Image (cartoon, rainbow, N blue to C red):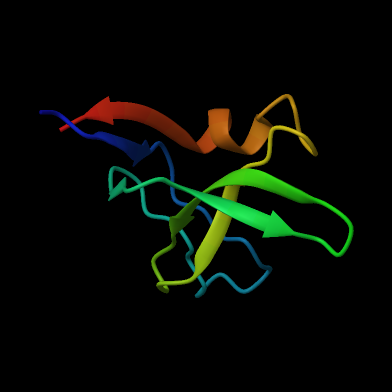
Length: 79
């Protein structure tokens, strides 16, 4: 059965340091749901492990309903 993966559309640097590349163009990332606790609420977000093996929230439907980062950087593919 095919799995949903996310293909990165472009190289992404999340800091001003050009040597810190978080996501690589054309690389596949496995998305997973995570329950984020912010002190008052628990909400479900979508995460991936970036190139540095750090968890990165790529979609937070409650806080960012337009999904700008998700839509700009990733596309869904089946593998």
